[in-house]
Image 1 (tube, rainbow, N blue to C red):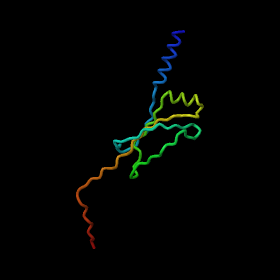
Image 2: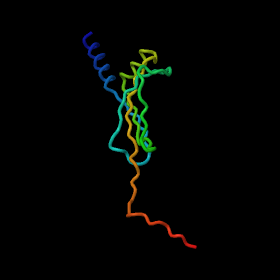
Image 3: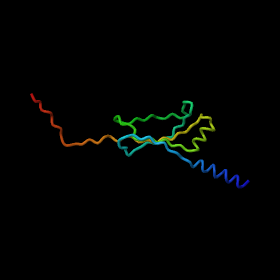
Image 4: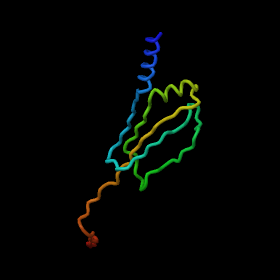
Length: 112
């Protein structure tokens, strides 16, 4: 019985320690700042906690998005039959493009 209990405890600890990442990466260079948020939703389309949708300034897009998952999140989703599904998201925004500056611009001459 003691060996069985130790095996179950070690297996449970091993499963809880498992973690996977799913990265999606775009082109460009990332900014130094990023965001990190845990979203509490469900498989049925509703959210347990509302979150603010953040947009990048100056029309910049996302550079990288990583969806983190672990066995505890998966076990929670299975045990609640998909009613509660936590999701951990981390993102980076694209850095603004570097503009070369060679001095003041000269107005174009009108050639007739």
